[in-house]
Length: 148
Image 1 (tube, rainbow, N blue to C red):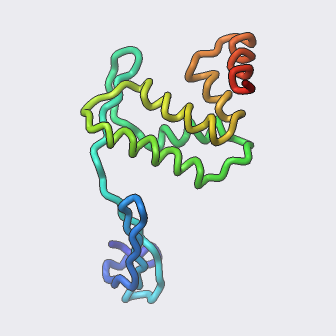
Image 2 (image 1 turned 180 degrees about the vertical axis):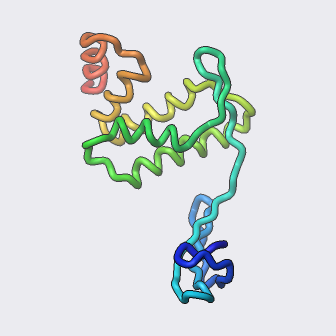
């Protein structure tokens, strides 16, 4: 572990905490520059390959998913922690399936359900792209379904 301040490799762990999802937070003290910093560890579970609509396969990309959700939530009163939580839920559910491959549609369905409860405007923004709402009538129909 390199100190983020001086890049030294000599540090010692002061405190360790475990979170509910199996992650570990460690407080560290650098022996060289005497600064303190935190590190976070989480187990890396295998996520399945995503099968795209055109048949291509690609790795699940947590950052790409988070970017897409952030775009949908732009200028909305959605906390960054809520977006990270939703991304974590999606990743966790994919890992829990225990499959080697799954369709990108499954990811989209999980996200769209999470956004529906998180922020309805962000849900509509995401749905326009994800569900392919190509005209105003389709968007209006989706909004009407939300309002029921």
